[in-house]
Amino acid sequence: MLSLNETPFQPTTLQLTGIPGMQRGHAWVALIFCILYLISIIGNLSILTVVVREPALHQPMYYFLSMLSLNDLGVSFSTLPTVLATFCFNYHHIGFDACLVQMFFIHMFSFMESGILLAMSFDRFVAICEPLRYATVLTNSRILAMGLGILAKSFITLFPFPFLVKRLPFCKGRILHHSYCLHPDLMKVACGDIHVNNIYGLFVVIFTYGIDSAFILLSYALILRAVLAIASREQRLKALNTCMSHICAVMAFYVPIIAVSMIHRFWKSAPPVVHVMMSNVYLFIPPMLNPIIYSVKTKEIRRGIFKILHKSQS
Image (tube, rainbow, N blue to C red):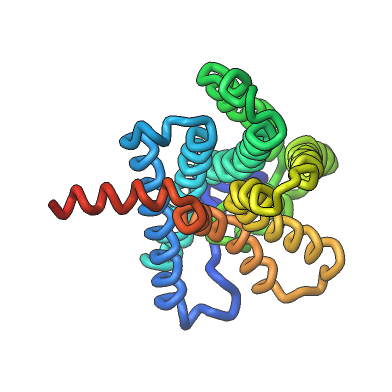
C-alpha cells in the first residue's frame, strides 16, 4: 500500500539492507564497521592536526596529504549515518531525497579522491624531475587552485545525477542492496528508460577515474625514467622511497575499483554478498589505510604525531 505522500512512481522511503547471509552476525559486523570508522576518523584527524601544528610540514606534499585526509573524512561521514543505523540500530529506512543527497556526496568524495591522488602524483613528479623548480611551481596559490579545481570538477560532473535519478519511476521495489545509497543500486530498482543515466555514468567514470589513472601512470613513467638516470644507487632508492606512500595510497584506492568493475563485467552470477563486500572494501578501506600508510611510511608525519602525544602527556 502507498502512503498518502507517495506516488506509484516515487516512494517516500527506500529500504537499505545489510550484508546478505549475515543477518545473525550483525553485531559482529557492526563492531567491525565501528572499528573501521574510528581508525579512519581518528587517523585522518591526526594527520590534519599534525600538518596544521607543525610548521616544518607546511609544504606542498603535506598540503595535498591534508586534502586527502579531509576527503577521506568526507567519505566516512557520508556513509556513517545509514551504516550505523542499519547495523547498530536495525533501522533500514531512508527518505528518497535523503538517499539522493547521500548518493551525491559518496560519489563526489570518491571522484575527488581520484583527483587528489593525481595532484599528489604531480607533486612527486615535480619534486623528483624538477627539484630546483619545486618551490616556484607548487606555490600556495597554485595548490589552492588545484584543490578548488578538483572540488569544482567533481561537483559539476556529479550535479546532474540526483536530477537524472529523480525523473525516473520506481516500480521494481524499494529495497536497495547496500547500507548506503549508490547510483548503480538505484538503477536496479528504477523503471523507464535508464540509458541516459547509464551513458552519463560511464562518461563520468571515464572522465574521472580513466583520465586521472592515465595521468598518474604517465607521471610515474616519467618519474621512473628520471630515477633511472640517477648515477648513485643510494640516491635512486631515496628518490623512489619518497613515492612509496603515494603508490600505496593509489593501490588502496584503485585496486578495489578495478576488482568491482571486473566482478560486474565478468562474474555477473556472483552471489550478492560478493558485490556488497567489494563495495564495502572500495568505500571503507582507503579512508582507513591512508593515514596508516602515511604514518608508517612518512618519517615527518610519524615524528609529528609522537611530538603531539608527548606534549599531551606532559
